Amino acid sequence: MHIKHRRFPWAEFLGFELNFNEREECEITFRPKPEHFNPMGTLHGGVFCDLADAAMGLTWVRLIGEDESFTTLELKINYLKPIWNSTLRAVPHIVKGGRTIGLLSCDVFDETGSLVAYATSTVMNLRGEKAQGR
Image (cartoon, rainbow, N blue to C red; front, side, top):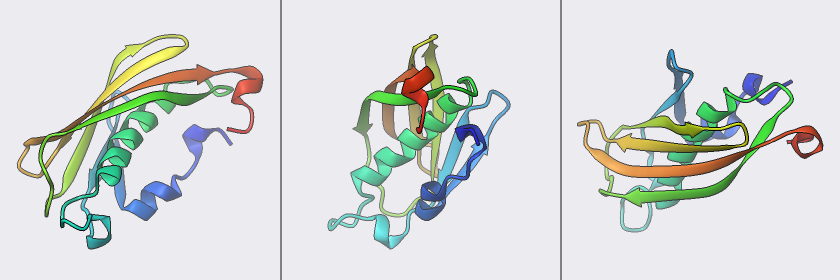
C-alpha cells in the first residue's frame, strides 16, 4: 500500500483533524489538550512544529509518484504567539515543486484568525532503491 493510502496513527494520537482541499493541500485543525502543554502552560513548541510539519508533509506526499517517497531536508518554524487555549488551523502551501526538491510553507492560525506560527520545509523526493521500505 502506498503512503497516500495509509492511515496516520500519529495524527490520530495527537488529535489532528486532516482536511484535504481541492488543491490536495492538507489543512489540519487541532485543539490542544493539557498533555500538549509545556511547564509554562503554553503549547509545547514540538507539538506546534509537528502540526506544521504534518500539514506540509501530507500535502507533498499526495503529489509524488506511486513508486516514490520523500524525506525532509530542512524544517524551520517561527513561533509568533503563545497558545494557552485555542483551536489551531495549519494551512500549507507549495512554494516551489520540483522533480526532486520541493519547498513548502505553512501558516498556523488560532481560532481568531491570528497568525501564531510560520514554518517552512525543504523536501527531497526519493526514487528506486532509496524509496523502498519508507
